[in-house]
Length: 353
Image (cartoon, rainbow, N blue to C red):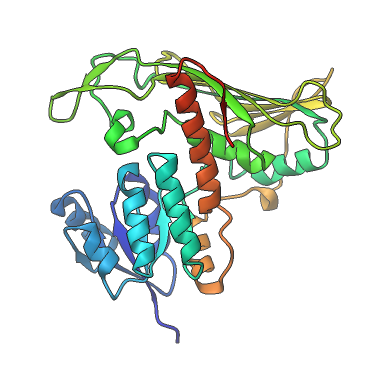
């Protein structure tokens, strides 16, 4: 009988408790060895709930532990780079929560370390919202049922930052989140899955409407991560497309929109359009000149969450990482960095390569 795969957990945030810990616990041949969280008390609570063998006080104890084969990183982005590099150097497989890192430089350092250890699995938790639809959308594009793509329109809004008296969250803290802005990187990852290509360049404008907020300790902190950002991107024409105008990316992300949130991605082509309604979890198809109709996806073609199983399969069976590998993570961070550079320089055009 093969020995169990031994996993340590660094950071037991909401997604780790909701998905990763139950997912790993339900799989045979795994041992949940140790956990480290922001406080020892919270780590002890998690360990008791999920049957984790021991509680340690620092992430380095997990990275350096000889009885741990793989680490699951559930911290804020500020630790993703440091912990990933240290874990890979210690000979451990890595599953890290999205977002990949705080900056492109950190992401590239993670990718370089992963390339230096091809015997180890390095995986990022994928954007989950489009998983049921990815195969269907990719198939429609591959078969040309939309015609030449003209626009990719992404909209994600909410009221999380609308109240100027609300305290600062970790997503607004530059030291914790870095250049990650709202849900921009996660939505871009979904689009990247379908198109399999990056924009040539982006132009962006952004705003911070509440430049100072109180942190958890009540201390006033400057807010520099945008509360609203709008992006225009341009793609190089596809070979042989004969497309005169080229494909455009039009995206708007806002945390200051009261009322009903908007949450959708549209793909507009010369023959038809697709609308992925992420609020209602529905996909719609509209031929040019025709009525919009729901896309019926049979159960066998609907993807599902299997992050933990994929991670274990890649370790045990040497299967390549699909969702999401570090190279794709770097592409997402490159887009995030380009958007940041554009808006912070007054809306200049910034090339991605």
